[in-house]
Amino acid sequence: MSLAMVAYHRPVMLAEALAFLDLRPGERYADATLGTGGHAEAMLRAGARVLALDADPEAVAAARGRLQGYGESLTIVHASFGELVEAAEAHGYAPLQGVLFDLGLSSLQLDEEHRGFSFRRDEPLDMRLDPTTQEVTAADIVNSYPEGELARLLEEYGEERYSRRIARQIALARPLRTTGQLVAAVEAAVPGPRGRLHPATRVFQALRIVVNHELEILESGLEQAVDLLAAGGRVVVIAYHSLEDRIVKEFLRRESQDCLCPPGILVCQCGHRAALRLLTKKVVEPSAEEVRANPRSRSARLRAAARL
Image (tube, rainbow, N blue to C red; front, side, top):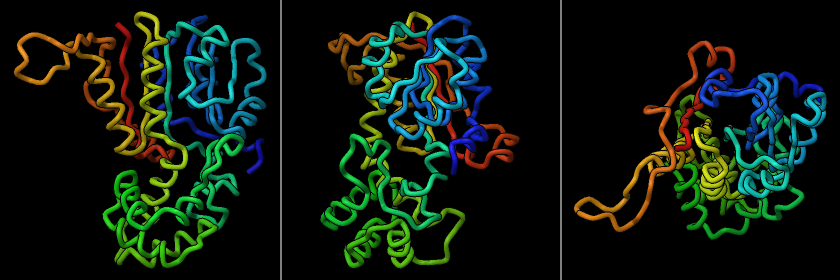
């Protein structure tokens, strides 16, 4: 896919994200997951100053080309949101009035060949968001992990019910160098008939999470976002699978409570004090109209909170 096609990327739950961010012209915001720039562009159009981060150098290059007309209102940094505080302080974006996390893969990553994120093409088994700094690929994992460890990560990070069977088939089929070879191993291991979800979906999810340390970086990024928020500032998170959403839900719940001591403790010993006020008591899902227009939004789940 050429960079010129990036303009057709459709940001997920755009109206909902902007509403919960409560954008104010001239104030500082962070788009912690720039992607192809759909959310960032909408924030800029609303008059915000935007610090935009992405770990993927190809996404950074594409977004810079697309958004170059916004001048000093936009600062793009090649970094993961695990480096949010460092980036914000280095570029004069602290404190922030809001931070947006859109945790899904962008259309650029899914559609661009050679990245290995999609099981719909046969390409190198890579899955690194940042090949310039990351050494371990998905191929390294499937070819070097012991079978038992491979089964564990498929179950833990992919919630895959056939994890042991798939791990066994992968071990028998080694070496695996391409996504097509991995898909063939998964299909040989998973019994039919099959439902709407492709049998390789959870396997690819698990490997991508492990390769990019996604869940550990998510927890760190959320903590950094809260530290950077000014009073009343908003954090908005769009997640796409249950593991991410569970981390976001528990983090926001924890940071919206005072004492976290176990039940039965009469006097607080933890000293924890609430930093957030929940804005979404229940998860917000995309409208039926959006799902029809953009099927990739189907699994999106939005949660938001405000800094006390």
